[in-house]
View: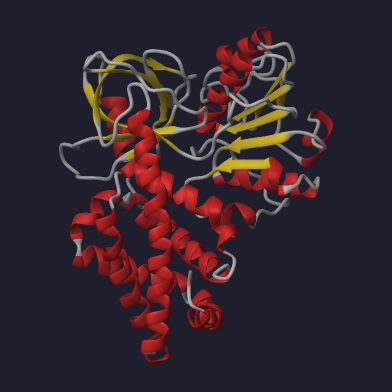
Length: 421
């Protein structure tokens, strides 16, 4: 527990920290990469270039300071952080590195306002959060080891199959190189792919599992990523996987992680609505298949949004869901259909997800909603659900970026759906 004095100091400086949070995080990353360059391997430099990581960390710091006297409110955020850290193999000895450079960044940005008393309070608050995360991460590592076929760190998997799903998405079927079992996973989780890139060292990447648990392989479905900004290069690892990795090649894989899950082992008592934009379909397809296999009578609504038939992945698999479950409805939307897409019935309709569509097509007053996709798509879905007064405990999403980017959604912005999550 934090001392009352520390809580009072943190609450007092929260407005000042919030006003300078992104400046603090920019300075923090600069100091940490310069002082401890070995940690750079854990960070996607494309997200550094776009500013997404700095913004996400700033939001996390502000949330922690705001709830410093009610840490239970941070449980979902701690779980997200712990799962991400375990996907990268973060260890307790790396936490002091972060703490040192975070305090140094706050001192530099706040100047004389960062008194010794304030820095001591922030240091105490950071250590408490570090201890909470470390404890949860050790639990996750133990759970991974205990699974039949489970492991920590990285394990060699062979590419057994490589199949295009659309012009931009390719699936990779991965089997353990040692012939041993594949552990069970929760639908919605991701695995980590670590590649020793031949020209550009880079961080591992997380890819959602797009099949259901219980088979002898993992399946990931990877979108060929464009640059995050106009002056940034195309996705380094996605391009490498698409162009260079072939059947028979070996990849280093981390165990399943992630908190964006649908627990099909427990009775599902409400209708489930899955809303997928672009390659965000991957975790939702895993959820749909798993739910139908475990509880086929649960009402399931699966909406898939894509640009057109060229980028539309898993069309047949999603249509097959309707014959697999007793109460399955599907809807496919294209926002930029090709000339003959509607005539050939490649989609059900043209347009985007709207509040009216969700009101008319889903049982929004009872359903649990799960959604994943590009930022504009998710902003629009989130705003629509809020407008329909769907409570927070029935809204679940995964987004690899600052959560505040979704929660600042506006209904007057029309999204595209071609960018991956």
